[in-house]
Image (tube, rainbow, N blue to C red; front, top):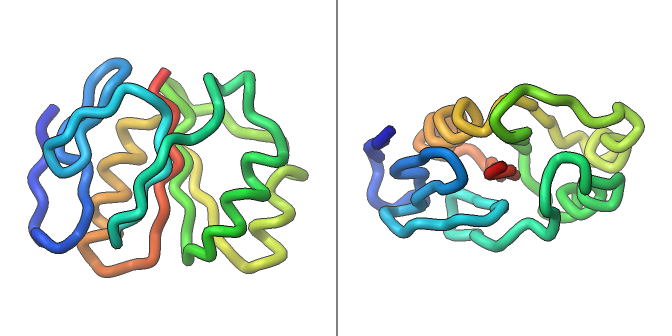
Length: 122
């Protein structure tokens, strides 16, 4: 699926498919952390089963207003205790499948929100 950004100054997901996504028309094939202001880096996990509480503690250090967690090809939730570092900093987390997370991230980023997408591309 191709997505189109409304604002050229915001980093957006411009396409996605099984095992890949494009950010500003550049293709990526690994799990990603993505922010509207240009933040982009690999997320150091291999798949949903490899996630640990430390992955979510590291997300809390990014000081976003909201984390959009794309859990892969299907909707899956992590243990609620893993979200304590985010709750302590009053950072919201929304979980959805990765394709829905890409679409939601684009809407929030285009609104100028301080949002980070944590995306599993499995």
